[in-house]
Length: 183
Image (cartoon, rainbow, N blue to C red):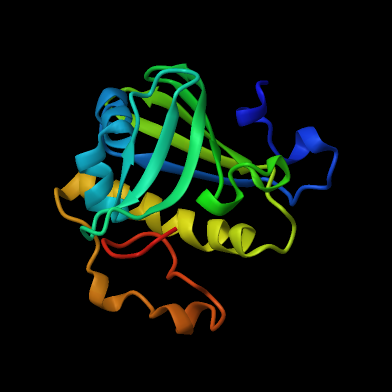
């Protein structure tokens, strides 16, 4: 892989166990794929736009949708096979140039008739890091919000989500999943 796509495991350093989460969504595979790549839809269920042309080798950015334009995560698209599989690197902007801080996200979609199974695998995470903890706490909320949006047209009610200090007193950001929650 080019340097910009090298991740923690490529450096020979130990990685945390992969985070793997599968969810079944009452929407066809093309609808789910579109929701994963369309910035306006990601804004609705993630509180960020995922900005990219979604071609292998190009950058992507996870940009807050609260109007300040802050990029919380950035990476590069590693592989694309629409609408079945997408792989991209993931790091905080401050750590992007440090391969040992870069991880990988893989989306795998399987059509189940009119429904879709989506499996997210987040690998190459630094054991015990804030990123590792944030990923493990954030993905279930993000994916539940995606499922709810696609099945009902609405996102989950944010007023019931815990405040950042209720989840992790040391967290710089709340867990992902609601409109204004960072990953």
